[in-house]
Amino acid sequence: MNGDTQRHDTSSQRGAAVTACMTEPRSEHSSLGVASLLLSFFPAVLLLVVSLMALYAISRLPPGADTEAYGFWMLMLALWTVLFGIAALGLGLAGVLQRNRERVFAFVGVACSLLVLAAIHSQVGLVDLASLVAAGLTEDQPKVHIVSPGDD
Image (cartoon, rainbow, N blue to C red; front, side):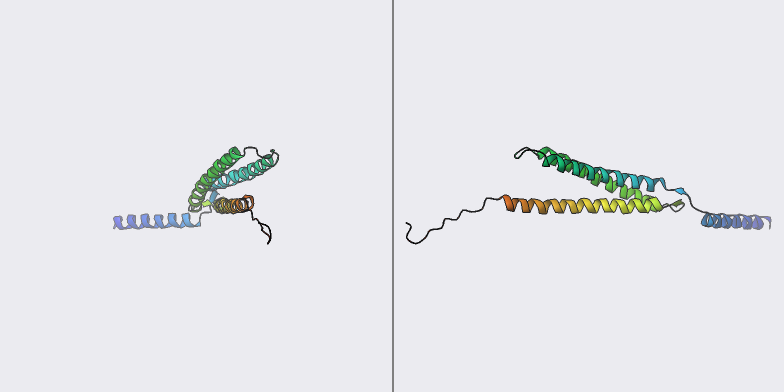
């Protein structure tokens, strides 16, 4: 009989512990969520600032100057921003899954990283479109020789 009472006390203690965990308020903010927000926000701002600086620097160059170096470094910066965005998305999703922590920063980090990845994706599409338009505008137009009747 004593074993049944002891077993009953243990199960009621477990039930009380589970209930306490469920009603316990959430602790501090998720550090994974904060890291996700920072990891997605700062490279995006850096990419925007450096893009504007490169456009300004290219506009100040004389015609015919070499601009391939600017394009290479912008490509590298965009690649690093995409990698940081993917890492931030992973950290944000891990922060969202933490049930015992505040998840506000994790949700904001996921949203910000998705926006950054969408912006990079649309920027690549816009650059492709601009290069097609620029190639069409700078392509040499065929020369048409008009011959009037009587000119041989």
